[in-house]
Amino acid sequence: MAAALPICLLDGVFVPAQDARVSPFDRGFLFGDGVYEVIPCFNAKPFRLAAHLDRLQAGLDALQIANPHSRAQWTKLVHELIAVNGVGNIGLYLEITRGAGSGRDFLPQADLKPTVFGFCWPLAPARNADLERGISGATLDDIRWLRCDIKSVALLAPVLLRMQARDRGADEAILIHDGRLAEGSSSAVFIVEAGRIVSPPASHERLPSITRLVVIEAAAALQLPLDAREVDRAELDGADEIWIASSTRDVMPVVRLDKHAVGDGKPGPLWRRVYAQVQAIKRRETR
Ligand code: PLP
Image (cartoon, rainbow, N blue to C red; front, side, top):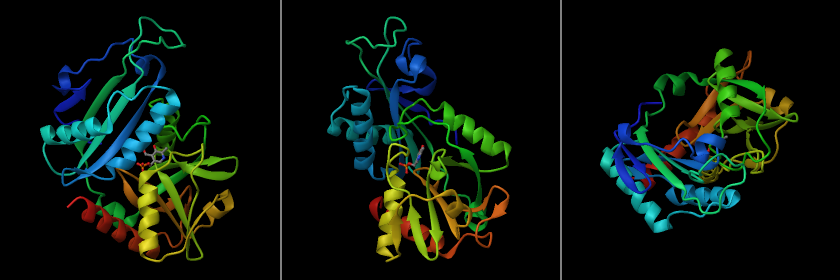
């Protein structure tokens, strides 16, 4: 990931990144008590902003944190944060924590003011080499908690999993939960089996990925068959194609899983079609 662009959003004010300060008593720092969003922006326009703000609201509701901003205010802040940092393709991060208390009580004080932090970074397009050659995945036991549907800032497990995947020479950790495919450490996962795309459905074991919905739309536009159902370990190992999808990594073909090649070890034909369709959707919506 590239370095942060110069201007951050902190509690409604735009400040230089080096001047942004948060209290060490902030519950985001002490407990990971907060939620976040990552919004991809193309051509300086946020892509699927409404879906990201809906998921942010769902996370705040789950944590019983009152949303500090209306939908209109969020929309304005997001556009302003993009504008003060320039144009082009940008990743935009928003975090809301429960705020800073006077000490460290597990039970939050009632009168806390949520902390709002946002920053951007230049979003690099997928590398041509990755698109031509594909990327690799390492299967690992899903050691995360039981509410993976919440986009919580408490991300220790995915951090450790990504480090383990890297140590095995892989680009992403593909997580296995009770013998079934959960998702990637920070991505949704699709497989292709006998010409059908399979996507594990939303559940408390997975983040409701917004890119997953874009891929599903792309497959529908191409009239490709897609099943939303669980995938077991044997199906994952025998898949003809495996893809990962996320807001910042797009839809990428996984051509190696652990020590074996996926399919013929090259990006697959269905991935090529879906990838092109996803790019067309993004271009259409962010012209
Ligand atoms: N699953 C997890 C655990 C993630 O962290 C992410 C994104 O960071 C995704 C899936 C993909 O979600 P989205 O497509 O909304 O970026």
